[in-house]
Image (cartoon, rainbow, N blue to C red; front, side):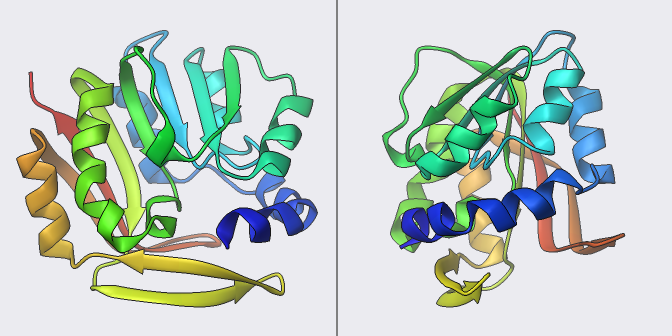
Length: 197
């Protein structure tokens, strides 16, 4: 459902995201990364604003997205230090290890049962001391909602369950933002974690 829906709204999505600001949590994430870090952007969309911002900081960005139309748009920008791949994160494999991984508004599109394993996969992709930032809901829920006239699937695990899974995967909690509001940005929960050495 989500792949088809995102392909259908790519023009509206680009219009909104092209003018979106980089918020404080993302700035904090970027400041923690070493110079020339390898960064994975899960659910990168058109590459703006997050992948473009990270690339401007001279990080090497790998953006992945399940919707091929989003990736086509991202490639049109010819961003420096970046590559974009059309793939579902559940099928993404690479020998590369990342200094940072960001999943902004993407994990909640995964089937709920897949979310039980996602943190182990994230930890495996991170270098020791690598950082992981993601957005998430705070309650156990599964539903569909419309956006730009198309339906999208969303789900989340309960907050304490997510924290347990992070710890089990060998990551430590660094900071969270709950009921985050900044400008036009609103998120239920933003999490910054770090893989143990």
